[in-house]
Length: 328
Ligand code: KG4
Ligand code: ZN
Image (tube, rainbow, N blue to C red; front, side, top):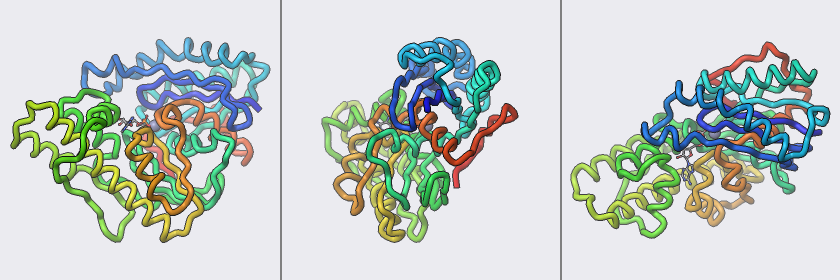
């Protein structure tokens, strides 16, 4: 079964065709990063306008690359939340129009669940129960997954999400936008040279990164950072602090819950230091999607939609956007 996935929750306009939940026939992503860079962050009104301009060419490319006609498509899966309301509306309304025009089933998908399902876009499938760490621009969620569609949230961020912390620290260090890749690049040729705090929040699976961000702010305010080597050292120290907390707390929870695997996902999971730390330290096998499947894409939405279909979870055209949707 071929599923068309559509993703417009934030600043990426994406469409993909995935066969049987793991065979990616096309995966087209139009990033708005160059447009939002001049503002140092995402401007919601600009994002939704840009989705309107880009969505149809992106859909056409996804269909052409997959060499697929509408007769071959079995269902349309679209992100309904969480995300920016104006952005989500573009994808959801286009999905509704397609399903009405071609008489196809419509599947509304949770963006966080879709991030997790990026781990099913591989021939090796995760085993249940597994522990999922979703680290993106808006979320740092630790979720126990006991079967398809069965999620229990164990922890979340109490303030800044991991990706948000990367973006804010990069801005403080004048490294540009988006912050995650900028910090990773700056840190690559350096070693952690500053002592920065880690919020362990003992007895809880929650995370907190705002204290770390404030510590970077004070470091830059109180010291001379005109030397790029010092900036690189601060970037490496910040990255190491985030990686330490995410890895240690997730592994502790995995041991406590005796899960079979740990699944990483979300944009921050593209970070090599984080991937290496989990791979080296996890006591159970790791699943980490390819970096291009960690950041926002529509292949993960299609994969998630496939498993919804198998569970008989299909929606009608009355499905609506849910900007504050959560998981578990
Ligand atoms: O999942 P995602 O693409 O969009 C959301 O759902 O939010 O995640 C975007 C976030 C941004 O904060 C970005 O800075 C971060 O993921 N990110 C990274 C890397 N690539 C993207 N953070 C650290 N290292 C990276 N290589
Ligand atoms: Zn995302």
